[in-house]
Amino acid sequence: MKISLTGAVFGAVMASAVYAGEVLPTAVAFTDGAVEQSLSGMPGDAANGRLIVGDKKKGNCVACHQVSDLADVPFQGEIGPPLDGAGERWSEAELRGIVANAKIMFEDSMMPSFYKTEGFIRPGKAYTGKAADDTFGPLLGAQQIEDVVAYLTTLKE
Amino acid sequence: MRKLTGAILATLLTTPVAFADPVDDTLVLNEETEIVTRTAAPDHLSDSLDEVMSGWLFRGKETRAMQADDFDNPGMIFVEQAMDSWNAVDGSEGKSCASCHDGLETMAGVKATYPKWDEAAGKVQTLQMQVNECRTERMGAEAWPYDKGNAINMEAALSSVSRGLPVNVAIDGPAKETWEQGKDMYYTRTGQLELSCANCHEDNYGNMIRADHLSQGQINGFPVYRLKNTKLNGSHSRFKGCIRDTRAETYKPGSPEFIALELYVTSRGNGLSVEGPSIRN
Image 1 (cartoon, rainbow over the protein chains, first blue to last red):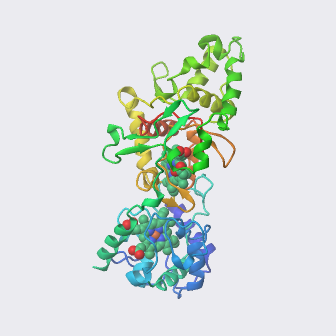
Image 2: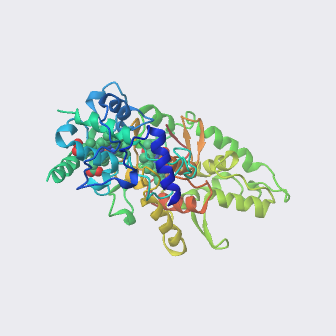
Image 3: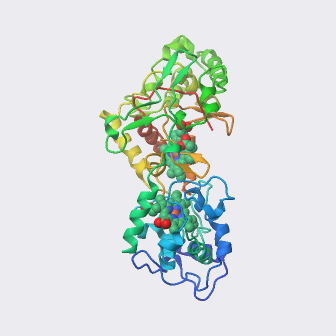
């Protein structure tokens, strides 16, 4: 899978600047579905994470989840549980694991894996319907994942 | 331990909520043709669904009302255009559809059984393929491009004279292999979002995904007139859109894969009424 590896590196590069401590999507270490280490090697920015969670073109988490804190974002979905209180239910490491690849914490989950670059069936080039090419990268970059995780830890009931 | 509690909690929280359920409403066309929009699921679905429901039940009140009267249904304008092609001579043999079949109403019941196995062709054919077979082999005319203009209009016309009759496609015998292929596709999680048709239309119908109220993704109502693009849309074009939305590489309308998927998805609606041209968002 030479192409997807190159794509992964490229995707991460596009999403954020590469920091020395960045973990590649193919090298994330999961323990019981959780990931201890920051994927970017940096702390997350909760304010930016809040934007990513609500933005259709970024995380689009609200397509499936309701978040009371994002009351200004219309049309929140009801596929997954509301994220209110997620920061109480889960540790930071668990949240990082869920956002990076929820299918490890929740078997067969419908939730997409946001930091994964391999193992897809007929992956496409974003929403064009065409085959993936060398621009293919994870749905969110390492720093974006950290920002989302930082935001989720602030969600207390 | 945390993990288990979280998982159980998540399951509790994802139990479908009542307010997004399909409406309790009945569809009667032109005050005379009763349309079955919900019925017991066909046997082959008994492990996954109790009831099958038309997409009509998941649309808003005004959209539903528009479909109840042919004068209000914009899809019928395209049916009228197809009536003209039905009678128009085309191709080297100097024939129209009407030369061999008389009136369009002789086609009542046909749409309900397609896609189906075609012995001569040795494969499953969709209604559009059958129409093109008549055009190329009997009229000496050119095949119409798949899911486009003339082809989709004619499919709508053929559907319109079958409205109210139960969808009844055969899934056994020589069609079985194609049906199995379509079933595999339905349950395969494709694209970067790793979503299958079943994730959205079997496990989550009734729920909102962003601004969309998920239906069972039935195709008894196809072709559909969509308010969004103000034209008739074929089922293959709809499949293409849904697959694209999983960030996957799609197939082409008219491709063997979509023929198989059409047979399978149609069979999930066996027992619902033929409803096309219907109206959707």
